[in-house]
Every structure is written in structure tokens, then in C-alpha cells.
Image 1: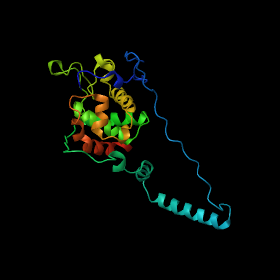
Image 2: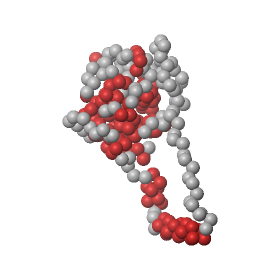
Image 3: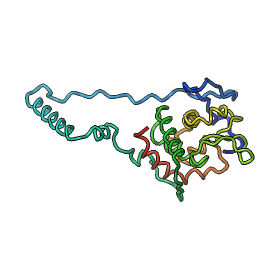
Amino acid sequence: MNKTLFSRWLPAVEQTSLVRRTALGVAGLAFVGGAVAGPAVAAQAAPEHAGSPVSQSVLQADKDHKDKSDKGKSDKDKGKDRKGGKPSRDKLVPHGVRGEQSRIPLSGEQSENVKAIVKATKKAGLDERAAVIAVGTSLQESKLENLGHLGDRNDHDSQGLFQQRPSSGWGTPEQITDPEYSTTAFLKGLRQVDGWHDLPLTAAAQKVQVSAYPDAYAQWEDQAADLVANTWNNS
């Protein structure tokens, strides 16, 4: 992350139940808090002529067919049906990847951090695309490792999955090394980016991170999409 984060991209992070409420301390800055509400569920219209004998027969036949199908499934299979398949590629990478892609093998700890990012994204009410941007950003910033202060090797006081800096208002060291808190902080910044959902990953990430290497995030989009696809319905 650049040594200087522009104040307009520094999110004021709402406190989760795990940490005390904190303010960013950046004058004149107030980001929208709270989770995005889930989509409203449209009421289903009743089938036309639902009360007629013919319609009742058709409905009963459909029910009998479904019951027979369900009897042949294990509880595990039924659970898969409820969860659905993996998110589509169009949702994960709506505009395709840019440039040469990189990949790294993940340890158990790194995989758990992917799950933590996805879980925090869903809790914030954001979709699969936001999770891809967050995971891709963390791949570039920390290789999905929850880094503490690295001493002489540290970029100032950058820490955590997203290399956020306490001195720039992201939170305390304890907060930004908490995966849920740091992901929520990143997502609050992302929400302030106009049209973030339609931007390439590297452009959206750069608007939040203000990195000295703005194009570096692009190389992780393919792996980030695969990781989110494999995690989204299991978090």
C-alpha cells in the first residue's frame, strides 16, 4: 500500500460484535455504515385457473413426481440442491481477466483466510464480485496471510490481510489483524467507489488501496474467482 492513503478512501468502520466501536479520526469524513439489505422477495402469483380440477391434477402430479425424486436422494444430495451450484463465471468475473495471471498454492491458514473474507463479504450484504475483488486484493497485498508488523521489512505500519495502516486510520493493530474487521473495512471503502461493480478488479482495488503499483492486482483475478467459486456456498 502507498505510504499515503488519501483520506477520501479511508472508511469509518462500524464496529462488529467482536470489537469496540471506533472512529477513523479523519476530519470531515463519514462513510455509509451498515450492511446492504438483501433483495426483496417478490410474491409469486398463483397459477392461472389454480382452482380448476385440471389444474389441481397437474399440481398433484408435479408434487408426486417431486416426492419420488426426493426419496431417491440422500440428505447430502438434498443439501447440495438447497445450496445450489457454484456462482457463475459471469458473476465472478463479469469483464474477464486482464493480462498475465499468477497463482500460488495455499496453505490451510491461507484457505481459512479466504473463507473469512467470503464470510465477511456475505455478512456485509455484498455479492460474489465484491468477494473476488477482496480476495484478489489480499492475494497481492499479503498472499492471503494475516501479517503482523514485520519490523524492518514492514511498509511503515501496514498489517493484516490487506496491509492496512493504523497510522492512516484503518483501525488499531489488533483490529486490522482480525480478518472480519479488515475485510469489512476494505469493503466499506469499496462501497464508496462509483461503479465499483463494473470496474476491472485492479481498478476497483486501487481506488481503495491507493497502491504504488496500481496494476499489480490484475494478475490475481483468475485465482481469486476460483477461490470464491469454491467457497461461496460453503461459508
